[in-house]
Image 1 (cartoon, rainbow, N blue to C red):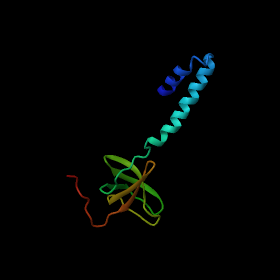
Image 2: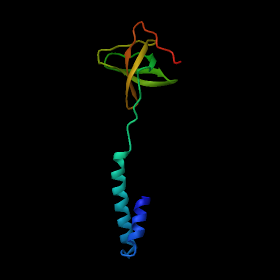
Image 3: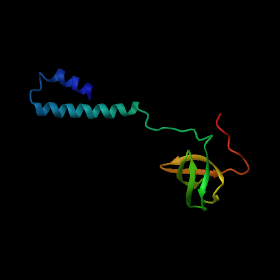
Image 4: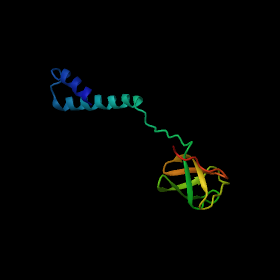
Length: 115
């Protein structure tokens, strides 16, 4: 938007109408925003390799439940619709879909503690 203002300052001797100047500035600003979007990374990726949680509300096959992760309670579902997890079970967090965690049961494997 600042670059658009500088361009308008250079063009102002030829564009006398303040209404037309405003329209050109808005058009240049919009174009600048559209072009700059390709330079901005919009997706934040998280490495879920060491993400573990505990089921606090049982997850039935094809249903959702709750998992305690990083001190909060999250809505969670199984990796597949056939998975069922009981309360108190340790799960590995595989990914996140919006505000819901996708988890898989961890059988007989204790989670690694952070160093």
